[in-house]
Length: 160
Image 1 (cartoon, rainbow, N blue to C red):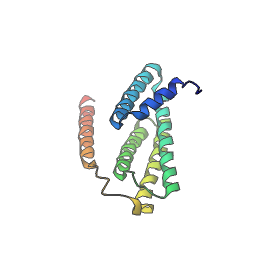
Image 2: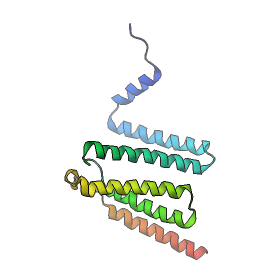
Image 3: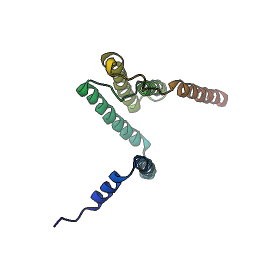
Image 4: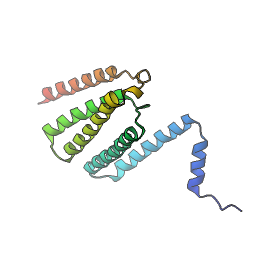
């Protein structure tokens, strides 16, 4: 006789049987619920930022491990990594100018590891990079970001 399944095992088995679109929907809903719960629970948002950077560090560490272990960058978007590096560089500059606190150190570490991943993809693992699959149009994102930042700059200059 089989022992009864635990509720978590039943839920996990049910999720595994679902089609990919349903899994994606469930992931988005779960993520939104987690964000709402975090917003309600966390009083000091600096701690939330540090926790988010810690999660990002774990993710980039797994990516670096994959690059080192498998010696391939197949499936990794170079353009996304470059956009992340641009974002982190701007955020690091703003952090230097405005705050210069723990956020600056965390942003610097994240930027350094992201630049290392870009270096690995561009130079060390170039033969396994699939440029034809990395067809994300990053220029549209950069142009929109420039427009938004210009608008924010104009607003800041006008209000001061």
